[in-house]
Structures are given as C-alpha cells and as structure tokens.
Length: 87
Image (cartoon, rainbow, N blue to C red):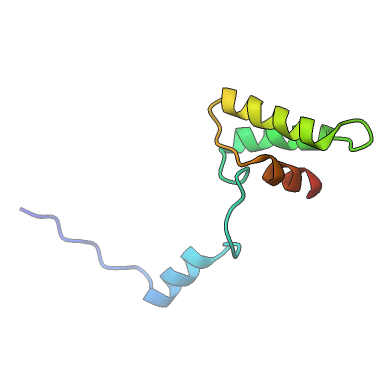
C-alpha cells in the first residue's frame, strides 16, 4: 500500500517565500562553496594577508596550492586576489 503524501501545512506562497529567504543574488564565490570549517580557515588566511608584507601573486598561488592539497576546489589566481581584496 502506497503512503499518502501529507497535505501541505502552508500555502504555496508561504513555502516559496520561506525557501527564497536569505538568498543572495548572483553566484557564490569559490570560498563560499566550501564547508564552514574550510571557510573559517580561509578567513584566517585572508585576515593574515598584509599587502605591505606579502606579494599578492605569491600569496594567492600559495592559497591555491594549499587548498588543492586539501582537496578544496578553488579558482584562478585573479579570483583569489579579488577574494583577498574583499576584506
């Protein structure tokens, strides 16, 4: 005997509004697609970046290499530099 689907508890409008709530327009960045623990580690990496001390290209390349070693997907150098600049 097939189970009957439960009746929706709310209207279609309520359901759509609930699902759409909190969504940002546009695409998620490469860092936003990572798990929360990876995002927290990357945030510390971004906080440690100092343009007066570190060369952006070298720092971005190091971020990419370290992420790849951990199996985390990244983007290209310019995308990481843009991410570094957003702090």
